[in-house]
Amino acid sequence: MSVQAQWDDVVRQLLVGAHRGGGDPSALLDECAAVGLAGFGAPLPVVVEVAELAAAPKVEERVVSAAAREVFAQIVAVDDQVLLTEWCGKARAAGVVAEHRSLPELLVLGTTHPGLRSAVAAVLGSRGRWLAGTRPGWAWATGTGVSADLVDLAEVLDLPSTQRLAALRRARRADPVGTRAFLVEQFAAQRRAADRQALVTSLEAGLGPEDEELLETALDDRAIGVHDEAVRLLRTLPSSALSARAAERLDRGLVATGGGFDVRMDGLWAEALSSPVEARDLLRDGSEVGVGGRVRGAAASVGTTYWTNRLGADDAVAADAVSRGPWAASLLRGAAQRVAEAADASPWAVAATRTLSGMEQLEMLASLPAELSARTVIAVSHQWNYDLLDHACSQLPAPWSAESTAALLERYTAMRDPRWRAGRPPAVLLARGDAEVLGANWARITERWPEHSIELEVLRLRMRLSQAFDRKEPVL
Image (tube, rainbow, N blue to C red):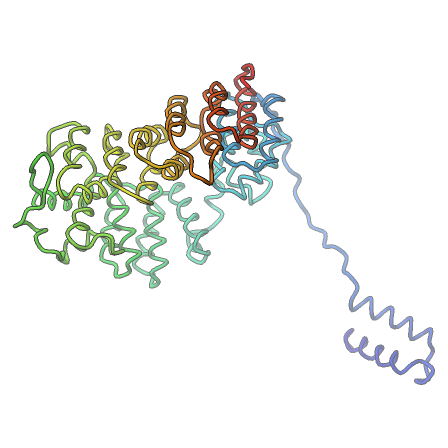
C-alpha cells in the first residue's frame, strides 16, 4: 500500500473515532504520526559537493582613500547613477580601485544596471574580478571573456530576443570568422523574420567589409525589419557598394547652384517614385519616400567625405554649401547620420542641428563625442527656449568640461526661467557640469536662482567627490 493510501485510511479512522471503530486510540495516533511524517515531512537537505573557492588574490593596486569611500557610500544612498559613473571615472583617472568592502555592491549595481558596467568594471581591480568569477551573474565583470562561451551557438536562437542578440554579439567578439559562417548559414535557413533580423543586427559588433556580402543578401529580404537593419549597417561601411551606388545617384541627381545644391529637373529624382533598384537601398519605414526622402537616403549613405571631394573644399565650406538650396533639409538630415565620421565634424554638427528638430536633433547630439556635442549645443542655442536647451543638455555625457560648463552657465543665466522652474537652478547643469567651475560661480548662481536647497546638496556632494580624488581645498 502506498503512503498516500495509508494516510487516507488513517484519516478515515480518525474521522470515525477509535472507540467507534473498535481500535486502540494510542495505536491510531502512533500510526497517524508515522504515516503523516512519511508523507508530508520535510526531507533532509541534499548534500552537494561544492569545490572550495580559490584564494583571493593579493591586492596590488592602490585603493581609494577614506574620503572617496565616504563619498561612494553617499552616492549609493541617493541612488544617483550619473554621480556613480563620475566617481568611477575619477577613480580610474587617479589609478585607484574600489575598496574590497564596496565590491559586492558595485557588482550588484553593474548587474542590475547594464549601462554602468563599463564604468564599474574599470574600478574593480584584481580582487573585484576574482569575486565576479564566483557567481555566473557577475561573469560580465571577470574580464576573461568567459561569458562569451556561456551559450553554444547551436542553442543561441532558442534564447529570448534580448539574450539572443547579446549572445551573438559576444560570439562575434570572441570568434569573428566562425560566427560569421554561422550567421550566413542560419540566415539562409531561418524562416522567422525576427530571427533573421537578430542575425543581421549582431553584425554591428565588429562590423567590417567581410560582412558586406551577407548584408547585401539581406537587402533582398521581404521583411521590412531585416531589410532596414541591413541598410543601416551598410551605410556605416565607408567603401560599401551601397555607398558607391548612392554617390552615383547624387552625381546624377544634384546640380550645384547658388552656392548650394538643387535637384536636376531631368535627372533620376525628377519622378516622385523610386525605381525598384533604388528602393532596394532605401529604408522601408516610410521616412525615405518621395523626392525629399530619396535625397535624404542617398545623403545618409555617402558620408561627409563625398561632399568635400565633390567640392574640393574643407568640411566648413562643404557643410555651408550643403546647408544652402531648396533641398538642404533633406541633405542635412541624411548627413547628420554620418557627422561623427568627418575630419572636422563641428561645422556639420552645427548645420545639422540648426536644420533638425525634435527627436532627430537630440538623437544626433547623443551620437556625437561628448565635447563636440557640447560645442554644438553652445553654438546653436542662442535662440532656443529653456526647455529645448534643457533637453539637449540632458543628452550630453557627464561630467562636462570646464569650458562647456562655463559657456552653458552663461546660456542658462541669460534665459528666462519657465514658470514651473522659476527661481530654481537647472538641475542638469549642477548635476553634470564641472564641479570646480560651478563651485567658483556659486555666488552668481545663488543670486540668479535663489531657490536652491536641493541643488546645493547635489553640488556639495559633487564637490566632495572632486576633492576626494584631487585633494583640493573645498570651494563651498
